[in-house]
Image (tube, rainbow, N blue to C red; front, side, top):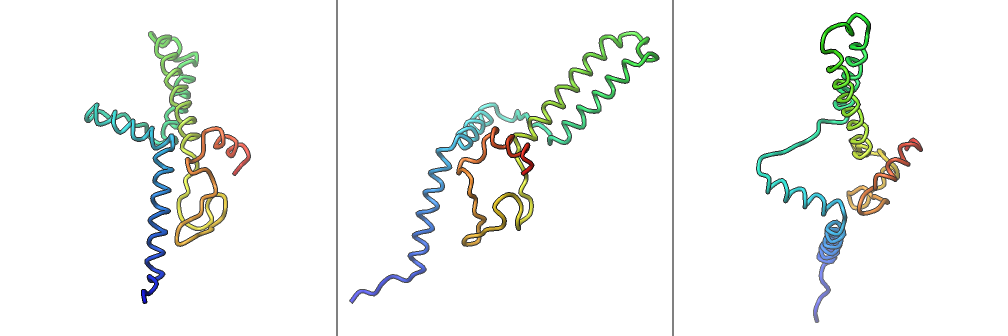
Length: 152
């Protein structure tokens, strides 16, 4: 008489099926395809990599350049030669860096640093993993913008 397989074996098979389904969902997501495409481009370009610094750094440099641009418009400094060329350039770079910092902070989303009840949904756990009730593809930029203005 054949005996039934141990429950541990069933649990492993269920885990494998769930893992395969999650991987398949991830491979269909836009984020995964973009990451794969940028990896391919990165390997094709070789060692050349362009990475933006953190959003806080970009915003800080942008504000500093805007302050310098304002200082260059003061009457005492405005009389110096070539300030009329330098001031608009510094202003443009300041606006560019500040805008890049704001956009990258919006696209980055909220950091879920630490465990516990960070983010929405509290600290609900299932089999040692936090339960995510959102889309399996992650938040899009519009929902992040809405959540930011709602204060969550």
